[in-house]
Length: 479
Ligand SMILES: NC(=O)C1=CN([C@@H]2O[C@H](COP(=O)(O)OP(=O)(O)OC[C@H]3O[C@@H](n4cnc5c(N)ncnc54)[C@H](OP(=O)(O)O)[C@@H]3O)[C@@H](O)[C@H]2O)C=CC1
Ligand SMILES: O=C(O)CCC(=O)C(=O)O
Image (cartoon, rainbow, N blue to C red; front, side, top):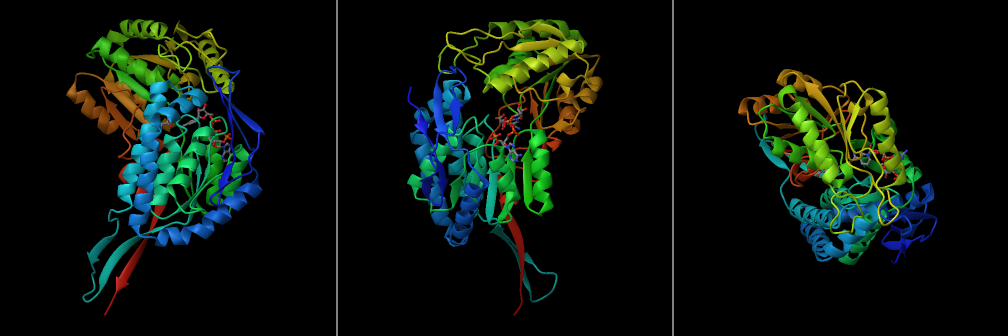
């Protein structure tokens, strides 16, 4: 298979091509997908300077200009979704269909924000003082820094970069170092669409690149998605210089299954939320809290479902669960299985490495039963196809346990009781609630984010994105 040598994209030019780092196909570790540069703070400084120079002209352009250009990006992503989706599957390990789906989602996000650029976000009000007019205008922030993870390597850059540019900001993006190829493809598409030089910049490399973006005095705002540990550093460093910051930092999402749930449906929901996309979603249903009456049948059926899923290479059409995205992630998955068992959990299914035709990071979907809510497996993000289950006496205990811990991103309940579904919706401490659905799988036109340690700052995505990527100016006009 071919591989490419990638470069940064700075000031409208592809610069600094290098083979310093490699990205590896997690389904076949003999396959090098791309080679790319290990960016430095100097590269970040060049990108920020280009972004700073380009931003005023971009903000002053007619919104129609910005809208038309974002629409062109959307069209190119639609047109190239099959090719890019396959590349995504090869580099990140998502199934081919999921890779194409994610590319289409990125296309739709650009199309949505092409529309947002034209919508009216300011307000006109009557002043409390006779003879005056008062209005709010929304203005761009300036240069925004975007730091993105590997698990949605084109959708997350899209849902940060598209609103940033729609509202007149310029962008410096740092993509995760195990999946640089999709961010690079996005840079190529943006270049070909004719977005002016410097409006969108990409610096490839490792964590140092992210740190340099966060610390740069000309970067007005940082949007970050990744781990809680790195997010905490990003937040502190950004706030130390009063930069605006938004962080999405994962979850330990509870799925409550009540006695009255349909067993087949509950198992399908838990398997989708917990195992699909190899559990590598911050919204994954990683903690399943099961009422006593259905508990044993549910755990056995979920373990059986996990065993029946075909684990394999992302591009194999028969595969249902692809590889972990990296060796480090696979090791983390097994480490947590071991910790959970040492702390008293029971391995109800899975837990082993899977041997396939190619050498890759394959693991069986795993169910760890009989866990205590305070165990590490129920409080720390694994980010693999690993589901823990907790047995509870009744709904009240389920809700109390769902609300424990330091995360509050997504949550779900499986029940036929409208009473409990409504109570859960109101009382669960999470940014998103799914009723009779997996905790993962969200729309792109509505807000995304959580509470407590999962998220910080204004919500991302959809109509909420304008809050983070603009600042309000209140304008009073007299005679
Ligand atoms: N909320 C979510 O959606 C995600 C959560 N995670 C969680 O994080 C765990 C580890 O994944 P990982 O990819 O290492 O997540 P990280 O938080 O390490 O990485 C997220 C992004 O931050 C960058 N980064 C790393 N260090 C710094 C720094 N000091 N300052 C600024 N940016 C930095 C990374 O660059 P680089 O890739 O070069 O290190 C990457 O682009 C997963 O197992 C999972 O639990 C991971 C991905 C997504
Ligand atoms: O569940 C989804 O569709 C989105 C998940 C997500 O944004 C993430 O894992 O980072």
